[in-house]
Length: 271
Image 1 (cartoon, rainbow, N blue to C red):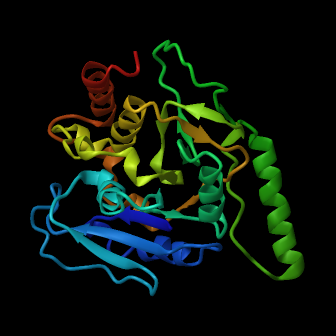
Image 2: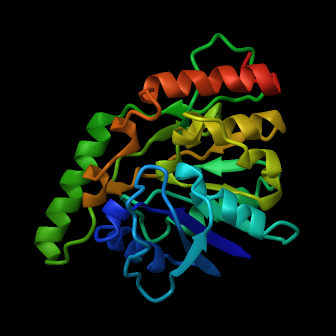
């Protein structure tokens, strides 16, 4: 079973459609696409219960609680426990290529005991890492510009415009410490247990670090395939982005640092 899961926030209800359309247009086997909409939002206490319009093929699932951005994966993982399922979670402000889901699902099928993410990063802590090789970020700016030039020329000559190629984000496949959810990541439901829901204040805003730390605590590697393109932005990216928010008095950098310390203190990882 292959499930795509994401969440969104009220200010993005009118803009999330572009992302959802890119998901229902995916090739390959997709059994469900779930959009989790909490009944209440921590950041938006005046939310009145309205729902976004969604295309056919997307199911809105109401959750009683708001786990912040981790709502995009944890509720689905809990509901799918005990089932032979792959769960691909992603962000609500990206345009995903038609083969994006199939590529990540297939890659995770080859590594069923690991998380497979389109992109991620290493912590700069001087860690002794046992998982090798490490992924290498692609820095080929010229190759990306040339690919976009060829695409533009072909579109003009054939009069068949299409989505511009995105930048390849990983040049050499390997492991990373932290997944970045904007590109999508595939997990198995049993990767997250009940402790995943006990998110401390402030840390609920930094899902990439929270989820990655939980995976590290279970010795589940985060694998980044090579050669995949970064998805494009949608207009939703400009609406109440968490990266720009201050949550409980902490900005993004401080919240990330607190999450790292929490994982070190409570799970003994990232040391």
